[in-house]
Image (cartoon, rainbow, N blue to C red; front, side):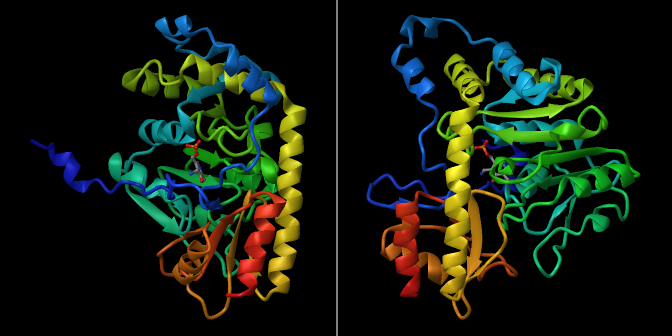
Length: 350
Ligand code: PMP
């Protein structure tokens, strides 16, 4: 009954989404604040009969809005159903074993090895440095079919400065695709989107899930040279021409349009993150320097799983990773000030 290819599938395990209430949920990097109020107004006015019709398969208005915000052309923008879908199309469209393995960090977004398995792409995990940052020179060593990096990296939260990305692009002799997954860039990093007109092998992948508070909507995008975007459209139209519904397209437009609301939310989260980090360090925790909406933290003598279990008993959810090298850390999403002070009180007792 099952196709042979099913035998080798190892699916990604997302963070828990408990159905019962009462949790302080700091485990999946969701935004604790609602999206722009313009979205609430739009949703309450939707004409249900509009659902009879297929959505715009090209997400034209949304691409225009994003292009305007980024100083690019709509032909530089690709829209997908969450950045996970965009990433899967990137893996399908650009990476194979012909020129060497795909390079990505040893500790990074755990969907990358899953897509590699799904599409049969050989990969090489590049070790992090002692301080958990990326060593860019090691991505330039040897042949590769391409490079994918989150910036900031997940789950560490550590961000590379833009000049390091530029250095990577300038010195990448293979000239294959360099994909920068900017899911968390809005929380203090400098985007590589400004380099798109200079490097035709650069693709920047973004999501509306974190900084736009729209994880429940499933909306992501890629920015790159027109030839790269056209290739992604070929992949998309070979799977599903209508992956993004009309409601998601319009909500995305409204979120980009209301940039001042988005900036306020982001700056609140950054302030909370930085004050939480200082307080946690004062309690004796080690917290890696984060430019994301989460921090990676540990306390001497405790395993990540123990911290996770003890916080869960107090109805606080964080995420741990059962991987040698990072299994003494937990990843903590930045919530509201109130949620973070409840967490700190609990951390004091651990
Ligand atoms: N990239 C990274 C690094 C992530 O952490 C996530 C969130 N799990 C994603 C991409 C996917 O985000 P989404 O599919 O919600 O756009």
